[in-house]
Amino acid sequence: MKRIAVVDNEKLRDMQQKLHIQSLCPVNRAGTECIGITKEGKLTIDELTCIGCGICIKAAPESIRIINLPEILDRTPIHRYGENRFALFSLPTPMFGKVVGILGVNGIGKSTAIKILAGILKPNLGSLEKESGLNELIAFFKGTEMQAFFEKMKQAKVKVSYKPQQVELIAKTKKGRVRDLLKKIDEKGMMHDAAKALEIEEILDNDISKISGGELQRVAIAAAVLKKADLYIFDEPTSYLDIRQRINVSRFIKSLADENTAVMVVEHDLIIFDYISELAHIMYGSEDTYGSVSGLKPVKNAINIYLSGYLREENIRFRSRQIRFEERKQFVKKQGMPLVSWENISKDLGNFSLKTGKGTIGKGEIIGILGENGMGKTTFVRILAGEILLIK
Figure 1 (cartoon, rainbow, N blue to C red):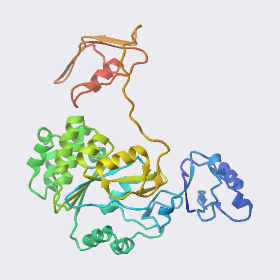
Figure 2: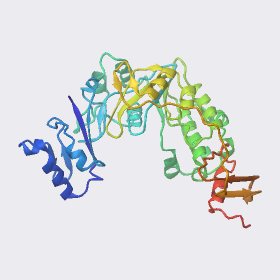
Figure 3: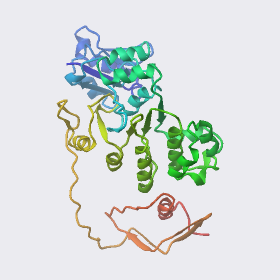
């Protein structure tokens, strides 16, 4: 059985511990080097000679992972970040006229996969010495739909626009007004239409470094959409947004898909995922170790499979237990002294004013606060925590 071994040498720094782990390996003891230490002092594991005994994992459980791969993945990975590092074994498939969702836990390779599709990351097809170009990818995917996709990319018949996950980095790399940023990249002449649809008209004259996370998210989406493209890829487009904004953004993204345009979305909110996607891939594997992509499925089927943790077609169980939603217990207000209480809070912060009624929080209670962005939720809890004083 093929194995994959991942070693986090950032966590495993102590040389004496590395030497101890090396000495424990039964393969090493038998005279064949399985666990070695490079000239740079990094611990490495030879996946071909490893027998999967797990002794090294017990010696450094936070730093070493060895996983037996399913038979379906006994092949060359699309990309590997380095020796004993994360490996990606397949890619999602864009569908013109459809919004294809990608569902999976963090650390499973979703962002890696869509960066390859966007041309931002050049895959190495398992070779640690060189990157692969479109010719190698066409040959690698011969006989599949991805072969046709990469052939179109080679012929410049497919242009990709990509909205990255970490929108907070925009404020660190871009300067000036939102209007100037969008106008500079507007290839469609639709900046005002996009700004209206995404409700960012009022911040167009604001400096990019002065807007909130939710506003940055919508600006990033606008920037991606204003580029002329055949495939639009959105990595977590609804983070930082409240529920109304999430629905509005999802509706806007769905409208992009037509017979000449494909859309792909990575999204963790299952409600929004169900709303925005028509078809879906499930990404499975082991976090920070390896990832692979299931076949395309109707979105509702994909969500049910994701919750069950079992891919029937691939005969792969990617989670040890099902995720089930239990019926909510009836809420009963507990008696006793409250931990926190408030009454008629009033606080002015610039042009914003917060006013509350009366309330308490008791021991053992979990209380949610629901409301749109900009309504004062964070201000309210900061007042309760004492970070904002009520003294005027």
